[in-house]
Amino acid sequence: MDNISLLISGMIVGVIVFQTAIVAPAVFTSLSSADSSLFLRKVFPRFFVLLAALGATANIAAIVSHDWSAIAISGATMALAVIAYLLIPMTNKSRDEGNEKSFKRLHLASVLLTLSMLAINLASIVA
Image (cartoon, rainbow, N blue to C red; front, top):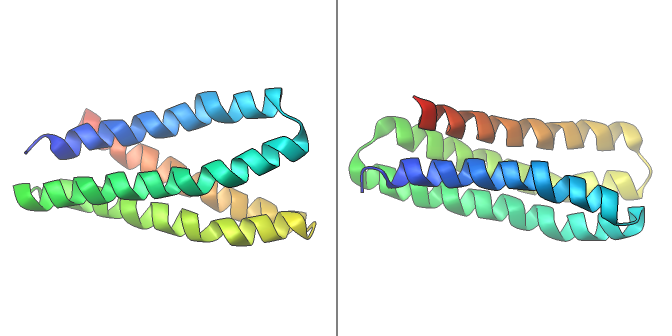
């Protein structure tokens, strides 16, 4: 049970890398703008729900193991994933209304939240 949180951190890193390095570039090079928009609006909510669920699972394992650093990492992962998920409707609305300034800010926030999840989970594996 002690290594479950570490294993899940590895899964989180893998999911984020797969999404950003393989899925997103393939979507933008293979689909039209309209089709890529539809696809990404389906994928990103599920992406953040998956990250939150993995964070919650790791958090439970960390609590059972009394691993305080893993509790903090998995708790932060859950919180960041939920925040990113909650930004999606505002991001989509900004895009739909042509408010590029708001869209860019919200998209950047989502990217920074995802990079933060990647960094803290990667650090937990390396440390």
